[in-house]
Every structure is written in C-alpha cells, then in structure tokens.
Image (spheres, one colour):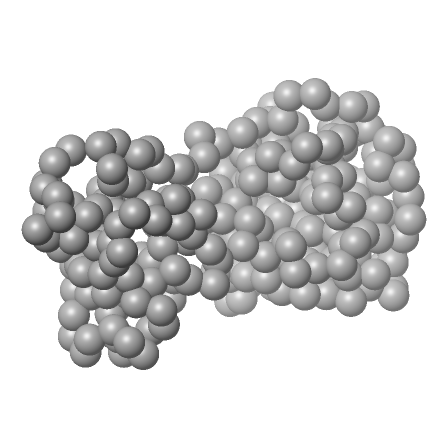
Length: 268
C-alpha cells in the first residue's frame, strides 16, 4: 500500500521520520512516497496545488497524507476523505480543495479514539491523529469507522481565470524551486483562444511574448511562457529565475492576449 506525504515540515527536524514511524508501527507493509516536505511554512494553497498536480499519477487506493496545519490545536476538524478511488488525510483547512472538485467524494471527521494515538498533543496532530488514520486506511480499515461524516469540508477560493474581451485574465499563484512562476491559467483555457495564433502572455504591464513549447525554446536572460507539466501556464527564464528577474510573486496579474497589432494587449 502506498502512502504519500506532503508537509511543510522540512527535513532538518525529525518530524517526517516520526510520522513515518507511527505509520509503520500500525501498517508495516506501507511504501512511502515523499511528494514534498518543502511547502512554505503554513502555506495551505501551495500544498493544495502540489496535490492537484500529483494525485492523478498514483494508483487506486493510495493514501495521501497532507499536513500543512497552522490551525493545529484549535477547533478546526481533522479530516479523512475518499475521492477518485484514493484516500486523503489531513486538516480541514482547504488543503483538499482540488480533490473536492471530484463528482463524488465522502469525508469523515477523525474522532474515533481507536484510530489515533492514546495521547494527543495539541501541537503535533500529524503524529497523533493524521498518521494513525492514514495507517489504518492503508491497512484496510473502512473510512466510516474513523468518525462521523462531514458534508461541508473547508474549501479555499480556487484560483482560476476569466475571459474578458478576447483575452484571458489570471494571476500568479506560486513558484517552484527554479523560480518558474505558476499561474492560474490552464492549458484548456489557452486552447479556448484558438482564433489567436500565436497568443502572447503579459505579466502586469510587461509583455512576455508568445507561448513556447519547452524551456529550451526560451531566450537566455529573458522571460518566456510555456504550458508546464502541471497543465498550467508558467512564466520562466531559461537557465534562470523568472521570480527573481521579474520580481513577481503570488497575486501578480497575468494575461493571455492577442499579439501586438491584432488587438490592444493593454485593454482590460
């Protein structure tokens, strides 16, 4: 059975190892996949986007444990859910927003004492509540046994884009370790502008240029745009960092517009 882990724990401290130890003590046959432990501290949206880009590549019955939990110890619920034939365990703070877009899902609040550690710290639910729940699901325990059903899991405002006057308007929603800027504009959104060939990308008031097909097609020391492997439009600098060059971060306006001469790229 596969259990993936997505956290903001980093690897300096023993937290990730402790979580794995708890899981192995309950279900020794687990195989772990570390999606990432480098989510920015407390950044629930970044973790949610990591899950969105990853879960479709895992087999049925995979258990995804995601812990980015700035509300640990408060009244926020602990959640487990089943969707798309897979299981998800973590805080009820919007981290599973993309998963909840599935046509069918079922969720429970992790309240059954038999499926958590005997003593629950108010500062490490990843160890005491989420890890045991993930382990028991991996061992074949039915979701319904973990606690009462939840009909209203927390959802984040999910980043998207709008079509305005023949152009797409979105925003930067994050960056990767290479400094590539991830946007809220998806490949399907761009394909919807079939009448514009090529289309150009504009970041704020700066024209980036047409969308290229791979990173190697970008110009050195200049920003370019590409549809990345996550299915989202990215702004990048070949062998460099778009985030550093453009000094752009989450929330910066991004538009896909007609090329110069075929429309006013500054028309909002």
